[in-house]
Length: 228
Image (cartoon, helix red, strand yellow):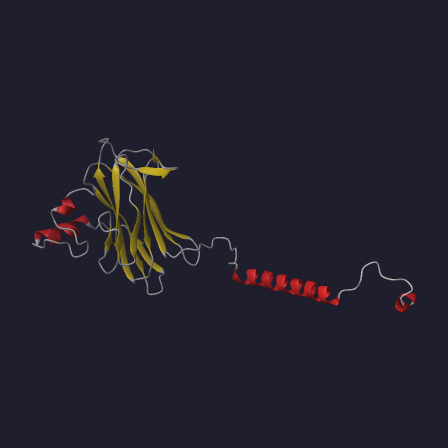
């Protein structure tokens, strides 16, 4: 009461403007926090933030000198492979040449990579059958090679559609790893391993007299030569 009459002055003068600014800063900080919560993605187990719908991987033993190639054909007949890395919604994200020239750059230095893996992603849904083949391009060792092919559906959660090992034993050996069918919603409705040669698709075009393959744009002579 006595303080009201100024008999006991305050230790610090009251500044209403300062209080208002402080309160305004608190409000701004709170709104900023709410904004962060709104834009942050939910951390859900098994959720994958990816533009791809499916991921197809081929791998064989680390440091193996042999060169294996992954071929994937979509329902429209597009084929992704080392000479045509983008075809329709298919993309060959990694082409591994075995011991021929498999290096990575680290701090400007060329270091041999031990990993033997090729990856094709499917970035859109086309209903129908997809064929996944593997070709033994160069059999350096002359020995059979055990390879593994995995097909994963990525959205809305990761799901393994196919995962199996098989053996290739000579240069030019081609195996159908898997054929799977999608419906219009991207649901896998069938999986099997019926043989189908994708390399024969190219050969048939060449035998019919076409100088350029319609899917790859590569001449029949150039296609017989390995990538640069």
